[in-house]
Amino acid sequence: MARTKGDHEARRREVSEAVWRVLAAQGFDGLTLRAVAAELGATTGLLTHYFPAKRDLVRHALDLLDERTAARPRRAGGEGLAAVRAALLDILPLDPEATASNRIWVSSWDTALADPTLSSDHAARYARGRARLAELIATAQSRGELPAGDPDRLALGAQSFALGLVVQALLAPAEFPPERQARLLDDYLTALAAGPPLSS
Image (tube, rainbow, N blue to C red):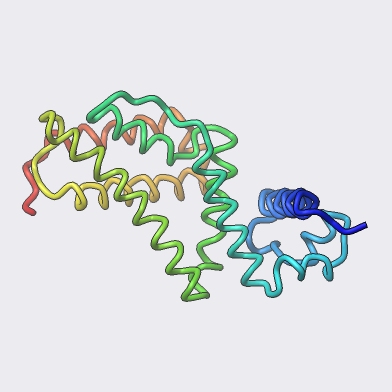
């Protein structure tokens, strides 16, 4: 009997779940067609139907990670500076799910840096995140909670701070428990709010 479109979509979801389990367990270093096939209980030949080359598998994994990150519940931060704080807290590895997601993201950097197309995709993802953050910052500026200046520049600094804190927390979790991460973020935002206006 011929396979239906629904069968195909169900199988693709199974493959995606297998890709995710390999990522969660082994990171991008362990993401191979063979590893995914073993996780799925299938042959690598089946997987080449979905991913003709390793790059296709990696790109799918990055898209899957992007989708799962976007689908995670977000903090309700209100408006203004509170919304900026909530958005930055959502980046940090403050719970097991966010920690696992951040581990996978960080493990993807080396893979992305080795491929110009994947590097460009990654850069676009971070640019979209900065753009969303800049909108929140502009609102905080309009409320007088952050200094005047280019919101894109402030968003760049805030994103860079958060990503740097992510790396430190992943490498030394005992030194950067969730409470300390939140305090460091609050210190950063307090200094930002009290600082001199930035030139455009």
